[in-house]
Each structure stands twice: as structure tokens, then as C-alpha cells.
Image (cartoon, one colour):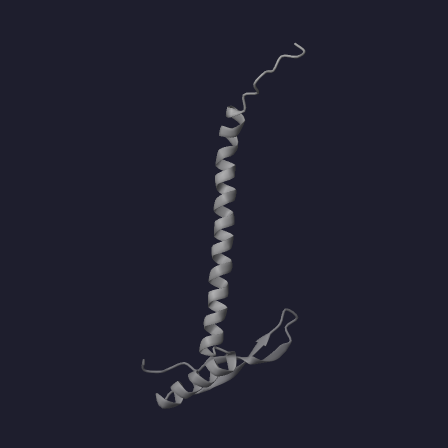
Amino acid sequence: MFGKRRRLDTRAVEAKSDPLRRLMQFERKLRDQIADLHERLQESKRTLGLTPQNIQAAVETALAIAGKPPLRKATLADKDGANRSMSSMFLRSPIVGGM
């Protein structure tokens, strides 16, 4: 027993862990892709100037050109039932008669 080398057969364990290894590799790649896509989205938003203020101005201008009712500020009730005005939240008035 002493002094003799024995080969440890790890094929069964490796075969069992292979699906987990592939799953972890997939998750790593997915995480990298999501990070890349998020960075591309942020860069596009910076390049196009897509700020909430610019988008609001564009929507207000488009509604005015189309002769539609303007945006109106929304008031929402919080979990305690108190009404709170949301300065950054706007609703479009319903359009009667279609577009």
C-alpha cells in the first residue's frame, strides 16, 4: 500500500460537475453581455441627450404641434393615503375621438 501510486479516477465527479460548470460559464457571459449593453445604452442616452427634461420638452412640443391636450401633473397617493404631487410625473390627457 505504501509507496505505490494509484490513479484517482475523477471522471465521474467531473461528469457530474460539467453541467454546473457550463451554467456558471453561461451566467458569466450573460452578466458580461448585460454590462456591455447597459454601457451602450448609457452612452446612447448621453450622445442623444435623452434627459427627462429633453424628453418632456419633445413630448410637449409634439402634443402642441398635433393640437392635442398638454401633459398635466399627476398627484399620487402614497401608502398612507396622503396625496403627494410628483413634479417629475406627468400624465397625458385622454384623447377623445382617436388620434
